[in-house]
Image 1: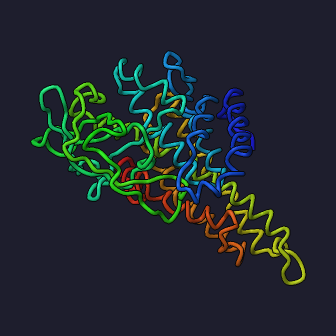
Image 2: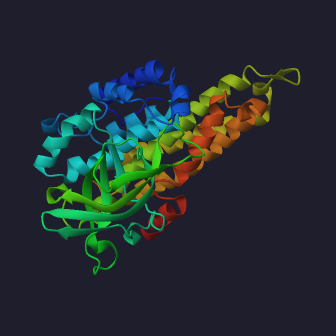
Image 3: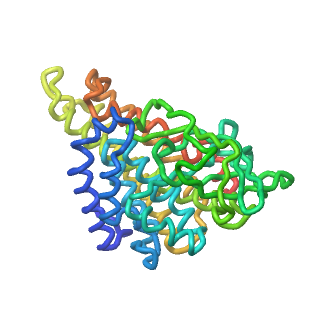
Length: 380
């Protein structure tokens, strides 16, 4: 369906990303699931095509697009049928990377920016801890100043790209006397820094071609210039970028849901049962028709929130709505798609089996549905 929201350039970008997915992702994704990661050469090719700098300022080598550009990338990655591929890319481009380009100093952007945009250095955002997920103010990892250095101690968990990333943007408490959110800062920690390591790779239910880790910091010493943004203002940077994170997760979810419905429509038009094909059954036709309508509604909610963001409008309410709505909807869609595939929907060679597993985290990560609905309720 044509959309009034996207420019000609954004439509061309969509076509380019879709071709890349067809040529590079679909033939290889199953092997990546077994390997538990996306190959670096694939990510470097994406960087070379400009996919990693869609919203980065031109002066740093980016495309200077707006939130709708991020939606295009996220939706098409979602359509790939490999949620782990989408997660790997979107964490780098829209969840971790923006901390460098929005809050980093000129020296930090000049030092790390070119390699990040080229896919030579992959990024991760390290906020979540065993006792602090959506409750960011509850993090316990600390950073203390020691002469010309900061020293980090603590742990992080469920960190996407956590095993193989090169740059980690880490949230830590820098003022232990400050209440809640007021004493949190962000830091750049490079792979291989003494005292820092991925403590273990996590074996997940879905997103299996995305590497996810628990991280450990033990007297991890980094230079003072690795402070990212203002000291004790990290919470506000995290909260600000959460809106972008929720936007791309919603777009990714709806891209996956739309593609799963396409695959299911193809299947039920061919699957013989009871003297005809499944598509002949009114209950199945109507259920799929309703799901198609719901996904179109979800996409329009995503597009409108992105448009509001591009206009500079405060849209926390809309971002929270779309995250809750799309995260729940994609799981409902996947349930029906597996159901209408029958036994084949439970077999791993069928794309919707994998997609259903991948979708389960969409209403957890980036702000669980219950947290999102509270954000909406505050603004009613």
